[in-house]
Amino acid sequence: MKHTFLLEEGIWSATGLYSDEKGSQIEVKAETICKHFKDKWVNEGIMKLEVEEGSVVEIRNDYKIEPFTPNREYTSWTSVNPSLGELKGLFIIVEDMILSKYNSNDGGYQGMESLYMQDINTYINRGALFKDYVKVSSWAVTLKRK
Image (cartoon, rainbow, N blue to C red; front, side, top):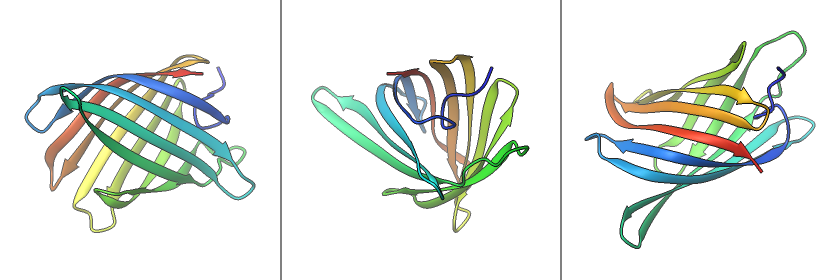
């Protein structure tokens, strides 16, 4: 199967669970939009967490991705996150998975993520973020193409 997330323009919604540093789980609702330009791809995402009744926290990530080139299964990306600052990482395609690893410029934050392609319109996403090797958060969501 040819990957559709990131490698094709599109709008994706995500639902699932977010776990904080204590393991408390919060329902996630998110949306990401992938756009392709000649010299870069852009993936704009916003995740909404209802931390308390009527109180929603939004986490935003805007990725700039170096387009994949023919015959190369990996590429680099940068992201600006208002809470974490600039992150740098890699995406690599391994069969039915897109894997990613990243860190902040100062090395304090590190993370990893996997996107398993269930079908052309569905990805299972798992990931975790650490600060100085201590868990900050993890998530388990399903992305659906709109």
